Structures are given as C-alpha cells and as structure tokens.
Length: 264
Length: 297
Ligand SMILES: Nc1ncnc2c1ncn2[C@@H]1O[C@H](COP(=O)(O)OP(=O)(O)OP(=O)(O)O)[C@@H](O)[C@H]1O
Ligand SMILES: [Mg+2]
Image (cartoon, rainbow over the protein chains, first blue to last red):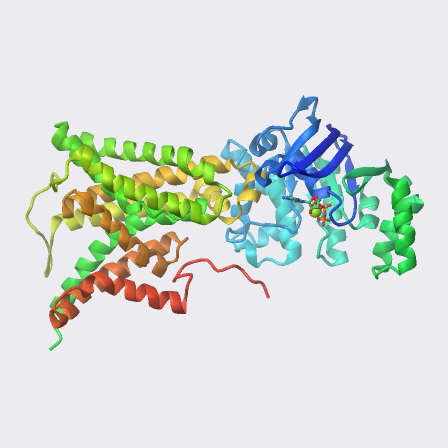
C-alpha cells in the first residue's frame, strides 16, 4: 500500500505547490485523484516517482511510504525497482524507438532477459495492436496506440502500482473506454494497484473504487467512488463541467468561487 | 583528359581516411546523442590518447601490446572523470555552459600536454611491415589500411551495441527523452558516464590510428576540426551519419587535393569539406540521417 502523509512540495525552494496532501492507495485497487488544471495532480505523482528532483522540486514536509518503507528521497530508478511506475500525461513514447524497443527500455530494471521477454508477451496479450506494430517507429503510431504503448511500457518493470496521468487526454471517448476496460482487467487479473489522475471525473469515478479531489494543492474531498459521484459539489464542478463541456456562465463561476472557499 | 585510375586511387584513399574520420566523429555523436552536450574537445581527446601511447612506448619503454590497452583504459577513466567532475554539475544549465567548458578543456589539454610529454613530434610506429599493401591495381599505405580496418571494426561493434543490446536501447531512450527514461527506471546519469567513457575509447583508437599516420604532437588535435563537417553532413545524432559523413569528407578532401589544388596552387583540401558543410546547413540542417522532430499527420 502507498501512503502519502501530509506532504508539502516546493519548486525552486520557494513555490509551494502541494500544501499538505494525504492519500492512500491500497493494493489491488483503483484510486483516482481528480482536480482541475494546475491543481497539483501531476506534481503529486512526480513526488511519488521521485522525478520531482530533476525539476528542481522537493518534498519538504511529510513522508511517502510504500509497503511500510519510506520512499521519499529515493532516486527514480530505485522507486521503479520497488514496484512503482509513473505513466506520464501526453503519452510520451520514445518516438524514435520502435514499439518493441520502447518495451525493452521500459523493462530496464528487470535483470534477466527472460523476464523482459515475458513482460513483452504480457503487454501484447493486453494490447494486441502493439504486437502488430512491434517494429514500427513509435512516433508514427496513432494517439490511442501511443497511450497503449505508454501504459504497456510502464507494465514492463512488473510494478505493484501504476500511476496513470490523464490517460484520456486528447483521445476519442470510445478509445478512452477501451483503455479503461483494459486497465480494469489488469487490476483484476494481474493484481496491480492503480492511481489514476483525471480531469474526466465521470469516467474516472466509474472505473475507480475510491477517490480524492484536489484543489490548489489541498485535498478537499475524499470518499468511495460511488459516494463522490453522488456528491453535489463533484456533480456540479467536475461532472457537470464534463457533460456540458461548455464554458460556464458568470453566475456559475461566482457560485463556484463561493463553493470553493467553502470546500477549502 | 579524365584519368580513371587516378580518380579511383583518390577515392580509395578517401575511403580509408574517411573511415578514420568516422571513428572520431562517432565519439562526438555518442556524447551529443546521449547527453545533449557538444564536445569541442574531441580532437584533444585524440591527441591526449596519442600522447599516452607514445609516452608508454618511448618514455616508459613499455611494449606496444601493453601501451594501447593502457591508453584505452586511461581514456575511459578520463571520460568518466570528466563527466563526473565537470559536466554533471552543469546538467540543466544552458547548453552554452557545456560548450564553453569543453572549449576551455580543449585549450587546457593542448597547453598542458607538451609540459608532460614533450613538445617535439613523436613517431608512433605500428608493429606492421612498411611495404604498401597491393590489392589488384591499388597499392595502399599499410598505416591507413590498418586505421580503416580498426575504425570499421569498431563502428560495426558499436552499431551492434546501439541497435541491438539492451544497454544500447536504454541509451537511445535516454537520448529520446531523459525524463521519461528516468521514470522507466533507467539511471540516466550512469548512461551519461557510459557515453563519455565510450568517447574515451573512440579517442584512444583514433589516437592510435591518427598518431601512427601523422606522428604525435599538439597538432594531432587538429583532426578534431574535421569532426564538424562530418557530423553536420551525416546528422549530429546519427551513428550511420557519422560513418557516411566521414566517407564523404574523406573522399571530397582527396578529390580536392588531386584536382583542385594543382589548379589553384594548393589549400582547397582543407576547406572543401567546410564548403559542403555550409551548403548542407542551408539545405538540410539536420544532415543526411539526422533526426527531425516527428510530426504526425
Ligand atoms: N517545474 C515547475 N516549476 C515551478 N512550478 C511548477 C512546476 N511544475 C508545475 N508547477 C506549478 O505547480 C502547479 C501544479 O502543477 P501540476 O502540473 O501538478 O498540475 P496538474 O494538476 O497536473 O494540472 P494539469 O491538469 O493541467 O496537468 C501549477 O501551478 C504549476 O504552474
Ligand atoms: Mg498534470
């Protein structure tokens, strides 16, 4: 199980982005972290994966524990070895490498070659289209295929926890549903835990077991996915926004501000 | 009257010399590809390696078979050390900082090497017979043949490493996107060090081949200047480009020496590759095999 205990994150030593975030991600479950632009979702994932330090950010308060051991302060490759992997938003594949080479690179922390081979086979069973494209340069894959490759590549290190950063971004709804369906299968069959970051709250709450809502660096709501989906604030600010997809009227904005103050 | 035999001889010589350029350019490409750093001291690396070999042979009286491995190991250690001490602290700084650091290093190496190894030109005799190698109509200088074969062997070994081995794939992943490579569990800093270590190996072999051809003194560093037309023609980040670019520069240089120099009284050999380089920058700035950003349509 992953646990964030009241962590604070600063960039450049001065810009405070996370202001006391506590999250738990139990084994074998899907937990979602919802929030709007700039709320601090990606920063939370980077704090966990240790990538933060390469961006001049650091966890300056609180602690991050995985299976009872403290992991904040470890290098990213050590965190991968312990079984946590982050799949970046915007499906960043190694575009000049072939599909299969991307997978080989993803399995870098696996020592024996047989393990890598098995990993590749596992990825191909969940994403058969990647097998068809195995020797194609990945920069030329479609957006959906690239997202599948990014997730598959993340599976190569045989993680216990996969963190997905906005996998639905820029994908057609049908493709997103397809990918979410595969994620659910992975959780059920491979006993992987997932921390899913999304702006698309409707879809995320359908998939997840448990959820958190983050706003300007603070967790403002927490609950089972079902209860969050029923929550009137979530409905109004996240679900409503996504269903209509249009800009809100001035009146809505004003109410939103008022509610937001109340939430935080 | 066009003389086919003469032209063919020029081209053959160009190919041999060109492969030796490719070898040095490979060190440059490696470092650029993996770490984004531009190494202006590649020629000085070659010079330093040459000095280590002749130093072992002449000053220490060591046998040839011992001197070369010592130079290889010494240059690898030098590459690792340089990465650790000078370049790692510059990660994340503007690229100009790294460029200036390598230019500074180049000057220091050129200035300091004669203090330790002496200023006069030292011969680096290869332990092979002196007679030209006769191959059908050609008679080839043995030093160049050995240099070219050495280059070819290493270029092949390196291409295999880069394209097929897991470490090579990881290195290309680092070249493609450092942040994502890091998130995939790849120790990016270690691969930076490996790239500089390999640049050291390449420099050691280059020092052997070029030192045998030209003799070892500070001017050996000038072969580094040929790296720029080679990598611009081939593509800054392409291993294949280093090979093809080296061949082009070698051939063009020899044709210029054979046909243009007699007409104008000499000197075109040295700048002809740069003319090509400038033309290439105008029509295809990323070179023959260099990467463009992928734009999907
Ligand atoms: N490297 C950085 N240096 C300084 N500030 C940063 C850095 N990265 C992010 N921030 C700031 O931290 C805040 C949170 O950013 P983050 O990327 O975590 O948001 P997010 O919730 O993932 O948003 P989005 O949905 O747009 O991806 C933003 O205000 C952003 O400007
Ligand atoms: Mg984000």
